[in-house]
Length: 371
Ligand SMILES: [Zn+2]
Ligand SMILES: [Zn+2]
Image (cartoon, rainbow, N blue to C red):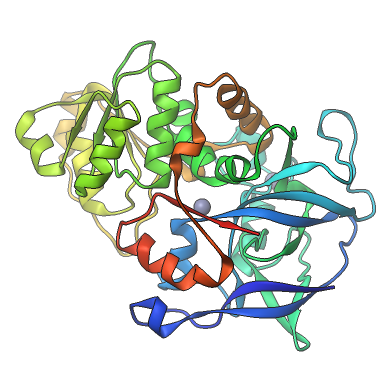
């Protein structure tokens, strides 16, 4: 079938992207879903830092690539054997959350309960294919790569069965979309990797979509939260969402305030250093941001030893989407995880280049593309 989608044509284009337009809105051909795959009509998609990282070249992926990995939509067609059975059964008309972290359930990574990503899914993501190696996207006969097995900045997507989690229809599409990346990653950094004890303070360094999701999740779990960011508007937003205290990194260093569990969600080495020095004696620093591969940080080994501190790397929130998304849905439904608050703007697909600028400039938490 023919679809309309946002295709990244080149990596590393100059700023502003609104002028250089590395992403074009194109007509593409989308093949029928193969065995174990499904066709989804996209309802909403979030613009995430991991999309920007591909656009600006800090994560190298094959182009042309149809971007977008945080999304929700409705199942339109099921490929052979993709309906499944039991609790994970899928039917036409179901709403699904896309996850950028397909899990085959059979490899060594999948056996770690979320600590390591699926080896099969990661290999497919790096290659720009679906799990199983297929490319279902093309333009004028030339293959177009999938982004993280999803490619949701489009009217429709074909994805592998392992790239979706079904949600009930009372979860609106924008909320469902944000659950699939920001909440899975930020919430997971707190719950799966940080494991704060009852009532312990959680600090979040870097208040973008993932950081704000970590903040909301920690509050939902009953923890006082300290927010840290260099952008004053984000600190105000964190206070409005229930943070008990907020600081710029400089203010934090002067204040001496620390927390038992600190989540670094900024993806830069200075933020990581701030997170480590903001961790209490005996506490845990969780780093979930994705800095450039050449970034280096400086911390005191003696501080780790003498103060019995722990640093945990949490890739993608140590998440198991099939296990974790229903937990977040339950918290959202109980009114304890107001995921809607992460949405800072609603845009149409042709605003995507400007959206990348706004994200890069720190002006956005989550911009949602509506279809
Ligand atoms: Zn993302
Ligand atoms: Zn696996």
